[in-house]
Image (cartoon, rainbow, N blue to C red):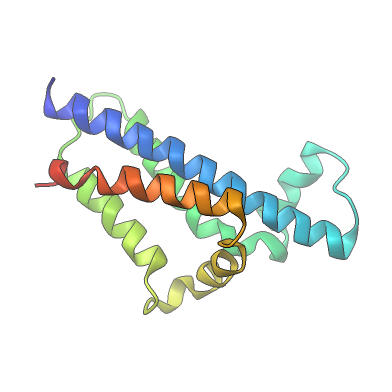
Length: 138
């Protein structure tokens, strides 16, 4: 198996794990929103809330990172190397860094949700996949 296909396979697994993590965080944010404002009536209303309501703003850095990872994976003709692995690892490290002020709001929302079983399970899964990338980034 070529480096590109091994890296692509692992990064796709990471993208899947991050989507599951994002979904678990989104469920928590939705429950919090509905507690304060009442039920969300449709998927379109939910989409509008996620993209524009301040109660969901904290999720946007993770959403953006996931979109960038998907874009890299979908780029035709791009041979994936250890550089892309290092880039995604660094982006995740920065997002979760306690010393990076730009993502303090994300970490606050994450900290509020992390004790939920679905969030904890999805969190452990993406971290496991990320850790499995280490040998590919050299």
